[in-house]
Length: 239
Image 1: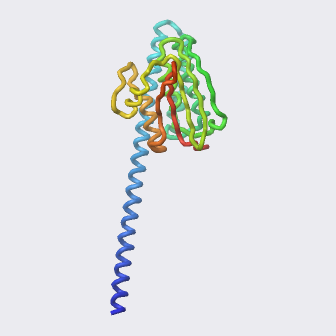
Image 2: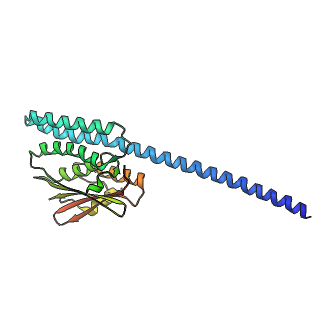
Image 3: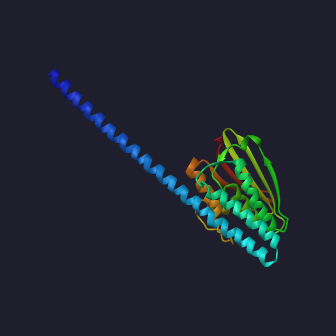
C-alpha cells in the first residue's frame, strides 16, 4: 500500500508539474501577444502624427503663399522638411527631451511666421529633464495645439521638471479660452472637439504615452487663470 501511494503521489506531482508548465507557457504566449498588440497600436498612433502635421503645416504655408511671403514660405517649408526627416527616421524610437525641443523649435519657427512674428515662446526647462526619454512629436503637438487656439499674439511657456522619478512637461498658452474639462472628455474618447482642429494630435500623444508607460501617465489639461495648461507626465527614463 505504501509503495502504491508513493506511485500515485508521484503521478499526481508529475501531472501537476505538467499542467503548471502548460499554464506558464500559455501565460508567456498571452503576454507576447499583448506586447505585440501594444507595439502595433503604438506604431499606428505614431504613423498618424505625420499626416496630421503635414496637413496643419501646409495649411499655414498656403496662407503665407497667398499673402505673397516668399521668404517666409521658404523658411516654413525648410522647417517642415526638418520635422519630417526627424519623425520618419526610426519613428518608434524614444528620444531625449533635448532632441524633442530641437524639433519643437523648427515647428515654432513655422508658427512664428504664420503669426507674423507675434508668437512668443518662453522656456523653463530643468537641466536634469533634458536626457529623459519620450515618444517623438509629443512636445511639438502640445505647442501646436496651444499656438493655433490663441487668435492674436500667442504667448506660450514650455517648462519641465523631474520629481520622484516622474518627468512633467507643461505647455501653457496664455489667452487660450479652451474648456479644460471638455478637452479631458475628448482625451477620454467621450466627445469630439467641435473646432477647426480635430484634436487628433493631443489624443494621439496621450494614447502613445499610456501604451508605452501605463495608464498612470499621460496628458491632462488644467486652467490656470488666463492660461490653459497641457500637462504631460512620463516616467523619468534616462538615455
